[in-house]
Length: 356
Image (cartoon, rainbow, N blue to C red; front, side, top):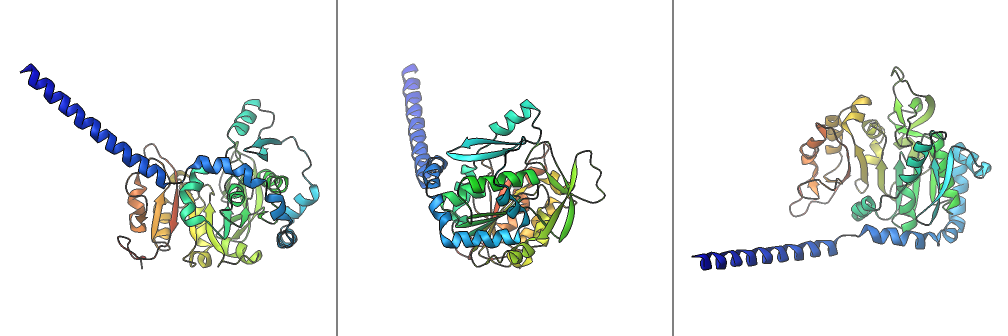
């Protein structure tokens, strides 16, 4: 009996090893079929070496000249020429000269965190390459250029128009453009994007990524300033951006996503443009909108989505009709946030048609 049990267990162990081997083969096949973010990391400094020639081309210089004529903030940055200030620290990041905003320059721990948290989102760039590559990118809430600058250097996009309302972030963004020979290739204006045109209150955070637009009657214990705001359609008109060449819009605006969409009817009508945006229910409520409202607007403008959360379950590309259910986990507790990619795809196979 013992001998029979021994044979049985050996057979089961052998079957288990075979299943593990087959599973590993499947994992290896998947890894061979997806982009490796480490390749992008290692390629970036080599591509950066070509930037001086690209930005020196006559069309790039002319494009920068025209942009500076329409963006007073960028024109001022060009004239300033990168004068050193105590609230900006220059570091080397993946072969680039990189300016880091120091919101609290006297707080050594905060300065250390600000510098230590500087990196480029290679994983997200790899995740979105299938729909984001080529043409022009519009970066809304560009911060210091962590998303747009590597995409331009790697050749994923030819140009990036950036909107960043915070003065310190914008100062670092423009330095990162100038120090890395990106003039005429990355074009940063100091402006917020929303549902209106004019000026709005802007609450400054203790971190460079936490600043946000707030309502006129919102009580705040933090520093607030006034910043210019314009609709995305107005931003496109102002700089003469050719929407036929725009392939990708990135949005990271601390809950103002619904407001951005309200002012972007003409951009949303361009079915070839893919959008990436952060989704955070807490910040959406703070901006007097909701996850349900955001989902409703996206369902009316796109056919498919990808949840970029590496722990998301289900198929990678899903019909937009499933977006609300798929993001249900964000409602918590505890509440979470993620980035999503939304796009319109031609109907084929298992894909559903665009919602009416």
